[in-house]
Structure formats: C-alpha cells, structure tokens
Image (tube, rainbow, N blue to C red):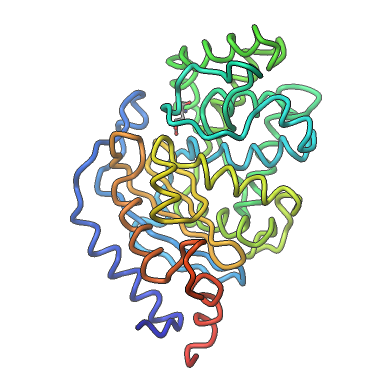
Length: 327
Ligand code: GLU
C-alpha cells in the first residue's frame, strides 16, 4: 500500500490525472456562451491539507466561474447573519431527487427544499445583510476572499449572461416572494445570486476553500477565520445530503464525503479535519457533475478509505501518514 510521504502523494495525483485525462465523455455546459467556451481538455486535481500543504496537477491555475459551488459558502454567511433557527424558517435542509433548477417548494412550509437547489440558494442569498446592494456584494466578496486567501472578482460577461437568461431563477424568486419566503428586493437578490455564481476561481483556490471547511473554518494558508466554527456542521451536512445535484444519494453512498459541484465543471470535497479536494474538468454528465471529477473522487475515496462510514481508519490517519512517511 501507499506510504504517503508528500512526494509520493504528488506522484499518486499525477498518475490519477494521467489515467483520467483520456475520459472524454460528457458535455460542456452551454446554456450561456461564456460556459460553452470552456476547453473540454481542461483538467486539474488539487488537494490542500489542514496544515497548509497544497498539491496541484494539470490546469490548476486556469480560471473559471465558481457557479453552484458558491452556494455552500453563502449558506455559511447567511447562517452567521441570522443564526440557525431563523435560517431554517426560510430554507429547508431536505434533499430532493429533483433537478437543481426545479420550481418546487415544500408543500406545507413553502420553503425551498435546501440551500443547494437554485430556489434555496436564491432564498439564502436574499438573507445576506448589508446597507445597500454594493455593501451586500462587498460582504460576500470579502467572505470568499477569506476562504481563498486573495482578492477575487466577478466575471462581468458571465454575470450579464446569467442575468439575461435567468428567467427560470426569476420565476422561482417570484414564487418564493408570493409565499413570503423572500422580501420585495427580488431583482437585487437575483443579481447578487448571479454575481456569486460568476466569481472567478481556479482549482487550487477551490482546494484551499474546501480545506478551510475541513479546518473548521480557518484558512490553512493565511490562518484567517472564514466562517464561525459552529456552522461548519450545518454546511457539511447539507453538502453531504444535497451537494451533488440529483446524484447526491448515490454520491453519499459510494464516496461518502461532503461535496459540492458546479456547472462549470468544479467539484469540492471535504475530508473533515484532514484535507480539501478540488477537481476541475468541464465535461459534465447528464446530472451536471463533472465526469472526470466524479471518477477521480471515487478513486481517491476508495484508495484512502475516506468514506465517512468506512470502518477502517483511513479517514482519520490520512494526514498522519502524509506527515510521517515511515508510519
Ligand atoms: N448559475 C447557475 C444557475 O443558477 C448555477 C448553475 C450550477 O452551477 O448549478 O442556473
């Protein structure tokens, strides 16, 4: 079995990258021109540890829009702004087998099902506090900066395209307004949602963001706190049950780790107290998950016994083995 010193782990990732590069099934998202421009060959696997090591492969610094992966982090900010009890009056935490963009609310409570489907994400974004639209945007950008460790920006063409074509999201927002789940600033909440989806990141950034969640909210590189530690469990539970579109159940069953994917081809995976994993490859399967990303995560989870419910010690001892190659 693998001895896991840092050089060997890098070699393992390089091999994994090589093995999966030849997978060319799937399709690049094309609902807006900015996403359709993605190169199907782009591919990167990055891992960041809670003690600040970062391993990268392939196109680790290729920028792309974060899309739905942003929902995880905005949920954290909304929880900080309002607390768990109030948050739960506006957004549920129930998985749904429906597609991410389904226009369905819980029949009894009228809440959107969870913060990872679009309706729930828009309701979550509408909760972000601030004195003005600019203030709310700046608070959100600052939150992302803390997770990533450097300044970030919104890609204006993607934002404009999302806004121009986002009528389905607009319909959901109006439906939620009708039921009193969001307030009257509907277009502003939608703008903020489209802006959060259009933030530019690279695969390395995503690994550090995932490692920040793994590290109970402290960025392992800058040591800055990105989110209050008491909301990590909220975020990771929702990622675990709802993070992978309508593949979430199978993902939890097979891979067994909290994760979130986005339509631009990113996936983040959190191994609590150990590592954050990120994969970027824009070729998507019919449910909207990166084809190579899912396969790579299956391979890593199995190789290191990372499934949370696996009886072996793999999950707990991964970092130990990485730092102490002789064990
Ligand atoms: N901006 C996208 C939408 O709301 C998010 C897509 C995604 O990554 O799932 O339709």
